[in-house]
Image (tube, rainbow, N blue to C red; front, top):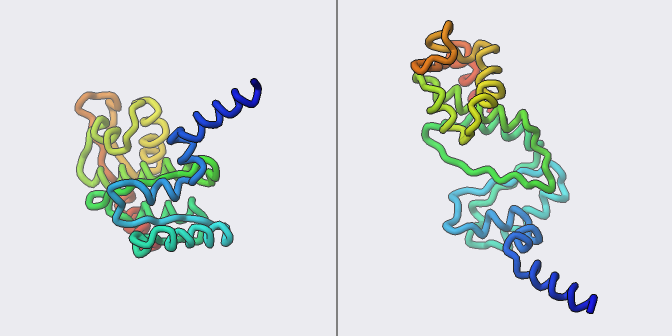
Length: 187
């Protein structure tokens, strides 16, 4: 009886799409997404894991020319890449492997901050900025994303004396513009 229950449970897990994706790994899931992406960039600092990712070219020959393997720290690479990318002209999806999570929260927040600086080259409302980053909690957004940019002098309010005004807009300061330019030059 005990073996019958175990077999039944295993059969349920074996046919579960989430369990199948977990067994394959996030790289396979990304490569099997339809329609395919124009480009795949896999970031892996460990040389042996990078070699394993490189074998994907043989497993997915139709996508092999689109697969890039970057052998460096994900935090360093993502920050440089986000700073160098023109987000007004580029769309991207980033899959973060939850089992090998090496990306720090500060990197993810930095990506949002770079997006905000680009977007605020023209004045933007809080709602427009929250929409750009895909966040929903205004308080956390103000504290985690806008706060550090305002404090660093990279972003400014159009109505500084009334931070919660319905007419409040945000714009990138000259210092913020210089940071964006420097980020592009360093990458």
